[in-house]
Image (tube, one colour):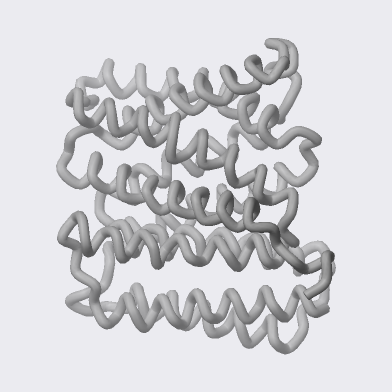
Length: 290
């Protein structure tokens, strides 16, 4: 293996830790929202505030300035970030940790591959085969039956994945991913605050101390620190390799959901996971070879 393709042990460790953080984020969200410990809007708002706080402190600790936080990122990216976060929360009210992560990351990759096609990229046969297989797996996952996930939850998580895919594409143009992510979290806080204020004024907001703590954990640690570790690892990963490794998150989330939350691992989920993750990986490998 040449120096151009070898991955250092440090990068492997950072990648593994960041994937564990992302999988844990699904578990934290599901645990908080499944039992009604907090409503979806309040979860999102606290998550964004906590993420903005931890990322801003890191930027300032590294010698950055408040002006750097204000000038990094963009309005479009922060809107995509907020859209992803709010849809993610509402989706996890009704989806299991593994199913939610599977739909989310499949939607992210399909969105990014689809955007490339829309820009004029000509897909290879392997990409068409992979995307067709992934789409078939997604159709099978949501087809009617006793073990089918919530259609509304699946639709919301698909839109959340599309939002994160759009945000990821916007992040490619940022010179400092950490500063830009912090800036986007900060930009998203006024929108988040306005949304939660409207909810609580309507009398429908609720949050226990445990739900609040889980929301803050999601924002500060499994999201905020997870992004920092991931962006550090990305410096030494090819785009295709980085995209493929993210497909481990649904498997980690599903396994942890079964072990720690008593969720059932249905045959439908196993078959759909194999089709979706295998299809997306096939398409990404084909894209990389092109």
